[in-house]
Length: 307
Image 1 (spheres, one colour):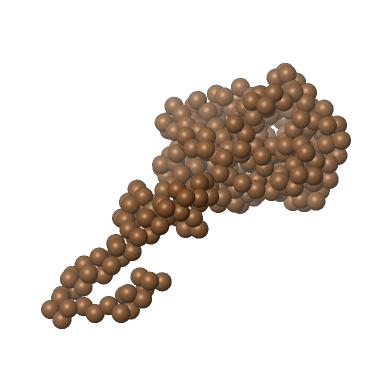
Image 2: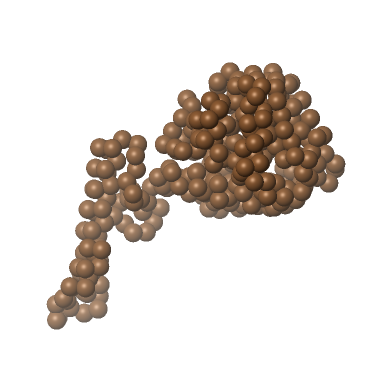
Protein backbone atom coordinates (compact mmCIF):
# COMPACT_ATOMS: atom_id res chain seq x y z
CA UNK A 1 0.00 0.00 0.00
CA UNK A 2 1.14 3.58 -0.66
CA UNK A 3 0.62 4.59 2.94
CA UNK A 4 2.75 1.64 4.13
CA UNK A 5 5.51 2.58 1.68
CA UNK A 6 5.47 6.18 2.85
CA UNK A 7 5.76 5.07 6.46
CA UNK A 8 8.64 2.76 5.53
CA UNK A 9 10.48 5.66 3.85
CA UNK A 10 9.53 8.17 6.51
CA UNK A 11 12.39 10.05 8.20
CA UNK A 12 11.51 12.12 11.24
CA UNK A 13 13.26 15.36 12.04
CA UNK A 14 16.06 14.72 14.58
CA UNK A 15 14.58 17.41 16.80
CA UNK A 16 11.08 15.93 16.76
CA UNK A 17 9.95 14.24 19.92
CA UNK A 18 7.59 11.23 20.07
CA UNK A 19 4.53 13.45 19.83
CA UNK A 20 5.97 15.31 16.84
CA UNK A 21 6.69 12.07 15.01
CA UNK A 22 3.14 10.91 15.68
CA UNK A 23 1.77 14.17 14.28
CA UNK A 24 3.78 13.81 11.07
CA UNK A 25 2.65 10.20 10.58
CA UNK A 26 -0.92 11.24 11.22
CA UNK A 27 -0.69 13.95 8.52
CA UNK A 28 0.45 11.32 5.99
CA UNK A 29 -2.47 9.07 6.91
CA UNK A 30 -5.04 11.86 6.70
CA UNK A 31 -3.87 12.92 3.25
CA UNK A 32 -4.22 9.35 2.00
CA UNK A 33 -7.71 9.04 3.44
CA UNK A 34 -8.74 12.26 1.71
CA UNK A 35 -7.55 10.91 -1.66
CA UNK A 36 -9.30 7.61 -0.95
CA UNK A 37 -12.56 9.45 -0.32
CA UNK A 38 -12.31 11.56 -3.48
CA UNK A 39 -11.61 8.51 -5.67
CA UNK A 40 -14.57 6.67 -4.11
CA UNK A 41 -16.86 9.58 -4.82
CA UNK A 42 -15.71 9.91 -8.45
CA UNK A 43 -16.17 6.15 -8.97
CA UNK A 44 -19.72 6.23 -7.61
CA UNK A 45 -20.80 9.32 -9.56
CA UNK A 46 -19.42 8.09 -12.88
CA UNK A 47 -20.61 4.49 -12.58
CA UNK A 48 -24.12 5.00 -11.23
CA UNK A 49 -25.34 2.47 -8.66
CA UNK A 50 -22.34 0.16 -9.01
CA UNK A 51 -20.30 0.60 -5.83
CA UNK A 52 -16.50 0.76 -5.86
CA UNK A 53 -14.68 -2.33 -4.52
CA UNK A 54 -13.98 -0.54 -1.23
CA UNK A 55 -16.13 1.19 1.41
CA UNK A 56 -17.02 4.83 0.72
CA UNK A 57 -15.79 7.16 3.48
CA UNK A 58 -17.91 10.08 4.56
CA UNK A 59 -14.94 11.86 6.08
CA UNK A 60 -11.23 11.45 6.62
CA UNK A 61 -11.75 10.82 10.32
CA UNK A 62 -10.77 7.22 11.11
CA UNK A 63 -13.15 6.87 14.03
CA UNK A 64 -16.58 8.11 15.06
CA UNK A 65 -20.11 7.75 13.74
CA UNK A 66 -19.33 9.16 10.28
CA UNK A 67 -16.17 7.18 9.50
CA UNK A 68 -17.92 4.92 6.96
CA UNK A 69 -21.28 5.12 5.23
CA UNK A 70 -23.36 2.65 7.22
CA UNK A 71 -26.79 1.10 7.13
CA UNK A 72 -27.18 -0.97 10.27
CA UNK A 73 -30.04 -3.46 10.18
CA UNK A 74 -31.15 -5.38 13.27
CA UNK A 75 -32.58 -8.85 12.75
CA UNK A 76 -34.75 -10.69 15.27
CA UNK A 77 -33.78 -14.35 14.96
CA UNK A 78 -35.28 -17.63 16.24
CA UNK A 79 -32.68 -19.21 18.52
CA UNK A 80 -32.45 -22.51 16.61
CA UNK A 81 -32.29 -20.92 13.16
CA UNK A 82 -28.96 -21.48 11.37
CA UNK A 83 -29.89 -20.38 7.83
CA UNK A 84 -31.05 -16.78 8.01
CA UNK A 85 -27.88 -15.19 9.42
CA UNK A 86 -25.47 -16.26 6.65
CA UNK A 87 -28.12 -15.64 3.99
CA UNK A 88 -28.99 -12.18 5.30
CA UNK A 89 -25.33 -11.19 5.49
CA UNK A 90 -24.69 -12.51 1.97
CA UNK A 91 -27.62 -10.53 0.54
CA UNK A 92 -26.52 -7.33 2.29
CA UNK A 93 -22.94 -7.80 1.08
CA UNK A 94 -24.22 -6.57 -2.29
CA UNK A 95 -25.42 -3.28 -0.75
CA UNK A 96 -22.53 -0.92 -0.04
CA UNK A 97 -22.18 0.07 3.60
CA UNK A 98 -24.93 -2.23 4.90
CA UNK A 99 -24.48 -4.63 7.81
CA UNK A 100 -26.72 -7.04 9.71
CA UNK A 101 -26.83 -7.41 13.48
CA UNK A 102 -28.70 -10.27 15.12
CA UNK A 103 -30.57 -10.82 18.37
CA UNK A 104 -32.07 -14.19 19.29
CA UNK A 105 -34.98 -15.40 21.36
CA UNK A 106 -35.91 -19.01 22.06
CA UNK A 107 -37.76 -20.89 19.32
CA UNK A 108 -37.18 -24.63 18.92
CA UNK A 109 -40.32 -26.06 17.30
CA UNK A 110 -43.18 -25.02 15.04
CA UNK A 111 -46.57 -26.41 16.01
CA UNK A 112 -50.04 -25.31 17.10
CA UNK A 113 -49.96 -26.54 20.70
CA UNK A 114 -49.75 -24.06 23.57
CA UNK A 115 -46.02 -24.41 24.38
CA UNK A 116 -45.03 -23.94 20.72
CA UNK A 117 -47.32 -20.94 20.26
CA UNK A 118 -46.07 -19.42 23.51
CA UNK A 119 -42.57 -19.09 22.05
CA UNK A 120 -43.82 -16.09 20.08
CA UNK A 121 -44.98 -14.05 23.05
CA UNK A 122 -44.38 -10.40 22.20
CA UNK A 123 -42.47 -9.65 25.39
CA UNK A 124 -39.72 -12.13 24.49
CA UNK A 125 -39.39 -10.63 21.05
CA UNK A 126 -39.42 -7.08 22.42
CA UNK A 127 -36.60 -7.92 24.83
CA UNK A 128 -34.50 -9.05 21.88
CA UNK A 129 -35.44 -5.87 20.00
CA UNK A 130 -34.26 -3.72 22.88
CA UNK A 131 -30.83 -5.36 22.65
CA UNK A 132 -30.68 -4.44 18.96
CA UNK A 133 -31.55 -0.87 19.89
CA UNK A 134 -28.33 -0.76 21.94
CA UNK A 135 -26.47 -1.14 18.61
CA UNK A 136 -28.33 1.93 17.25
CA UNK A 137 -29.60 0.04 14.24
CA UNK A 138 -31.53 1.95 11.59
CA UNK A 139 -34.35 -0.60 11.31
CA UNK A 140 -35.42 -3.83 12.98
CA UNK A 141 -36.86 -6.83 11.17
CA UNK A 142 -38.53 -9.94 12.55
CA UNK A 143 -37.10 -12.63 10.29
CA UNK A 144 -39.73 -15.20 11.06
CA UNK A 145 -43.03 -16.38 9.62
CA UNK A 146 -45.09 -17.01 12.76
CA UNK A 147 -47.89 -14.64 11.76
CA UNK A 148 -48.59 -17.01 8.90
CA UNK A 149 -50.32 -19.32 11.37
CA UNK A 150 -50.92 -16.90 14.25
CA UNK A 151 -52.63 -14.30 12.04
CA UNK A 152 -51.18 -11.33 10.20
CA UNK A 153 -52.48 -8.91 12.81
CA UNK A 154 -49.88 -10.30 15.23
CA UNK A 155 -47.08 -8.89 13.08
CA UNK A 156 -48.80 -5.55 12.62
CA UNK A 157 -49.13 -5.21 16.36
CA UNK A 158 -45.53 -6.38 16.94
CA UNK A 159 -44.16 -3.75 14.57
CA UNK A 160 -46.01 -1.01 16.41
CA UNK A 161 -44.80 -2.25 19.79
CA UNK A 162 -41.18 -2.38 18.60
CA UNK A 163 -41.46 1.22 17.41
CA UNK A 164 -43.02 2.28 20.69
CA UNK A 165 -40.43 0.44 22.80
CA UNK A 166 -37.28 1.37 20.84
CA UNK A 167 -38.15 4.35 18.64
CA UNK A 168 -36.81 2.38 15.65
CA UNK A 169 -38.85 1.57 12.52
CA UNK A 170 -39.64 -2.11 12.16
CA UNK A 171 -40.94 -4.67 9.70
CA UNK A 172 -41.36 -8.43 9.39
CA UNK A 173 -40.79 -11.12 6.78
CA UNK A 174 -44.52 -11.73 6.35
CA UNK A 175 -45.66 -8.10 6.32
CA UNK A 176 -43.16 -7.31 3.55
CA UNK A 177 -44.19 -10.43 1.64
CA UNK A 178 -47.84 -9.38 1.87
CA UNK A 179 -46.94 -5.85 0.77
CA UNK A 180 -45.24 -7.27 -2.33
CA UNK A 181 -48.25 -9.46 -3.12
CA UNK A 182 -50.57 -6.47 -2.83
CA UNK A 183 -48.26 -4.19 -4.83
CA UNK A 184 -48.14 -6.63 -7.74
CA UNK A 185 -51.80 -7.67 -7.51
CA UNK A 186 -50.87 -11.29 -6.91
CA UNK A 187 -53.92 -13.45 -6.16
CA UNK A 188 -52.56 -16.88 -7.12
CA UNK A 189 -49.74 -17.96 -4.82
CA UNK A 190 -47.77 -21.19 -4.44
CA UNK A 191 -46.32 -22.10 -1.06
CA UNK A 192 -43.30 -24.23 -0.12
CA UNK A 193 -42.62 -24.82 3.58
CA UNK A 194 -41.06 -27.40 5.90
CA UNK A 195 -44.05 -27.31 8.28
CA UNK A 196 -46.59 -29.88 9.43
CA UNK A 197 -49.97 -30.26 7.74
CA UNK A 198 -51.98 -28.41 10.40
CA UNK A 199 -49.60 -25.42 10.38
CA UNK A 200 -49.70 -25.35 6.58
CA UNK A 201 -53.48 -25.43 6.55
CA UNK A 202 -53.58 -22.46 8.93
CA UNK A 203 -51.26 -20.47 6.64
CA UNK A 204 -53.36 -21.30 3.58
CA UNK A 205 -56.54 -20.25 5.43
CA UNK A 206 -55.03 -16.92 6.47
CA UNK A 207 -54.08 -16.13 2.89
CA UNK A 208 -57.52 -17.12 1.70
CA UNK A 209 -58.98 -14.61 4.16
CA UNK A 210 -56.65 -12.01 2.62
CA UNK A 211 -58.09 -12.73 -0.82
CA UNK A 212 -55.12 -14.76 -2.02
CA UNK A 213 -55.62 -18.33 -3.24
CA UNK A 214 -52.83 -20.81 -2.58
CA UNK A 215 -53.11 -22.74 -5.84
CA UNK A 216 -50.34 -25.20 -5.00
CA UNK A 217 -48.45 -26.09 -1.87
CA UNK A 218 -45.81 -28.47 -0.57
CA UNK A 219 -44.87 -29.06 3.06
CA UNK A 220 -42.37 -31.48 4.57
CA UNK A 221 -44.08 -32.33 7.87
CA UNK A 222 -41.15 -31.26 10.06
CA UNK A 223 -41.78 -29.87 13.54
CA UNK A 224 -38.25 -29.29 14.94
CA UNK A 225 -37.04 -25.88 13.83
CA UNK A 226 -33.35 -26.78 13.74
CA UNK A 227 -34.06 -29.54 11.20
CA UNK A 228 -35.54 -27.12 8.65
CA UNK A 229 -32.04 -25.97 7.72
CA UNK A 230 -31.07 -29.53 6.79
CA UNK A 231 -33.40 -29.52 3.78
CA UNK A 232 -31.12 -29.46 0.74
CA UNK A 233 -31.26 -26.86 -2.00
CA UNK A 234 -31.91 -29.64 -4.51
CA UNK A 235 -34.97 -30.77 -2.54
CA UNK A 236 -36.27 -27.22 -2.37
CA UNK A 237 -35.72 -26.72 -6.08
CA UNK A 238 -37.71 -29.88 -6.82
CA UNK A 239 -40.61 -28.72 -4.63
CA UNK A 240 -40.56 -25.31 -6.32
CA UNK A 241 -40.73 -26.93 -9.74
CA UNK A 242 -43.68 -29.05 -8.61
CA UNK A 243 -45.79 -26.11 -7.42
CA UNK A 244 -44.85 -24.12 -10.52
CA UNK A 245 -46.93 -26.57 -12.54
CA UNK A 246 -50.09 -24.78 -11.38
CA UNK A 247 -48.78 -21.53 -12.89
CA UNK A 248 -49.03 -19.31 -9.81
CA UNK A 249 -48.21 -15.63 -10.10
CA UNK A 250 -45.50 -16.06 -7.46
CA UNK A 251 -43.93 -18.79 -5.33
CA UNK A 252 -43.15 -18.19 -1.65
CA UNK A 253 -40.57 -20.20 0.25
CA UNK A 254 -42.22 -19.50 3.56
CA UNK A 255 -39.67 -20.18 6.32
CA UNK A 256 -36.53 -18.27 7.25
CA UNK A 257 -34.64 -21.44 8.22
CA UNK A 258 -34.58 -22.76 4.65
CA UNK A 259 -31.61 -22.29 2.33
CA UNK A 260 -33.82 -21.02 -0.48
CA UNK A 261 -33.05 -17.33 -1.03
CA UNK A 262 -30.06 -18.08 -3.23
CA UNK A 263 -32.27 -20.08 -5.64
CA UNK A 264 -34.30 -17.06 -6.73
CA UNK A 265 -32.32 -15.96 -9.76
CA UNK A 266 -32.09 -19.47 -11.22
CA UNK A 267 -35.76 -20.26 -10.50
CA UNK A 268 -36.96 -17.03 -12.10
CA UNK A 269 -34.82 -17.59 -15.18
CA UNK A 270 -35.93 -21.20 -15.51
CA UNK A 271 -39.63 -20.92 -14.65
CA UNK A 272 -40.47 -17.28 -15.34
CA UNK A 273 -42.16 -17.02 -11.93
CA UNK A 274 -40.88 -14.73 -9.14
CA UNK A 275 -39.57 -16.51 -6.05
CA UNK A 276 -40.39 -14.60 -2.87
CA UNK A 277 -38.24 -16.02 -0.10
CA UNK A 278 -38.96 -14.82 3.42
CA UNK A 279 -35.30 -14.17 4.31
CA UNK A 280 -35.19 -11.92 1.25
CA UNK A 281 -38.48 -10.18 2.09
CA UNK A 282 -37.12 -9.41 5.57
CA UNK A 283 -34.02 -7.79 4.08
CA UNK A 284 -36.07 -5.80 1.58
CA UNK A 285 -38.42 -4.61 4.30
CA UNK A 286 -35.61 -3.54 6.63
CA UNK A 287 -33.80 -1.57 3.93
CA UNK A 288 -37.03 0.24 3.04
CA UNK A 289 -37.92 0.84 6.71
CA UNK A 290 -34.51 2.47 7.15
CA UNK A 291 -35.34 4.87 4.31
CA UNK A 292 -32.95 3.34 1.77
CA UNK A 293 -33.54 1.63 -1.57
CA UNK A 294 -33.09 -2.13 -2.04
CA UNK A 295 -32.74 -1.73 -5.83
CA UNK A 296 -28.94 -2.07 -5.72
CA UNK A 297 -29.25 -5.64 -4.39
CA UNK A 298 -28.60 -7.87 -7.38
CA UNK A 299 -28.48 -11.61 -7.87
CA UNK A 300 -31.08 -12.47 -5.22
CA UNK A 301 -34.30 -12.25 -7.16
CA UNK A 302 -36.37 -9.63 -8.91
CA UNK A 303 -38.27 -8.62 -5.76
CA UNK A 304 -35.47 -6.20 -4.85
CA UNK A 305 -36.13 -4.24 -8.04
CA UNK A 306 -39.94 -4.16 -7.67
CA UNK A 307 -41.26 -0.61 -7.22
